[in-house]
Amino acid sequence: MSRNSYLTALFILFAFSLTIYFKLNLTLSEKKILPPPSGLEFYHFGYNEVMADFLWLTYVQQSWNCYMAKNCHKNWGFRVLDEASMLAPKFKSLYIYGATGLSILLDDDYGAKEIFDRGLAEYPEDWVLNYRAGYHYLIELENDIRAAQLLNTAGDHGAPFWTKSLAAKLYAKNGNFEASEILIQSMIVSTEDSFWKKNLEERLIEVRNKKAKAAQVQNLK
Image (tube, rainbow, N blue to C red; front, side):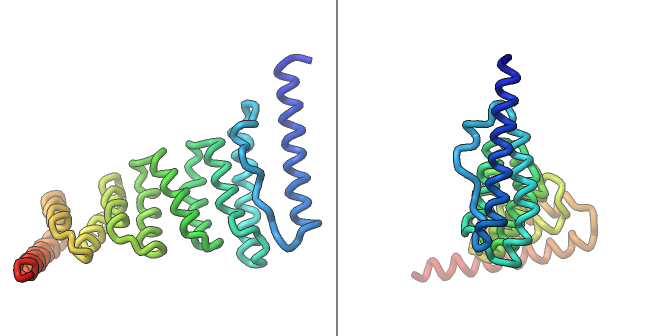
């Protein structure tokens, strides 16, 4: 038997074993859908992308069932995406859609954070990914500063203009007036829309006033 035939046979056996594994989850263990075994990235035999596709399809098919029936192992969603992303680090859908579902459907906010961060390491300039990660940091993790950084990056790479405006508000809300001021100034220079320019100029004055008041309070201490 040639080497390629041997590897193909091993992969077919592996895929068959995984199929049986997931079927057993659905038939013999209705209470919990278990996560895939760890370390798959070391046993792909060159079929890493195919295996990542298989895990992704499993995640898509089972996420709704997990949400409705609450019958998944606590870390099931994260483990599936974790293994898939290690098998195929450039699989963008895992990060954009998988992490969002992990937070919204499966209530795993910190698992979603891990997947978002991994995706940002692979696609640091993708505005959709930065925007979704920024929303996650803002709403689910309540980390305004990190959210502002991500929304600002999203705005730099094609996101709607208001994302940078929101980033400036978040900086000011958390007392980082200098970052807010610099960002608003750059937006004033970059926009030709008279409505936005007037609005931003008013906000710049507001931020500078807050910055001055904060400095006065600091001097009194």
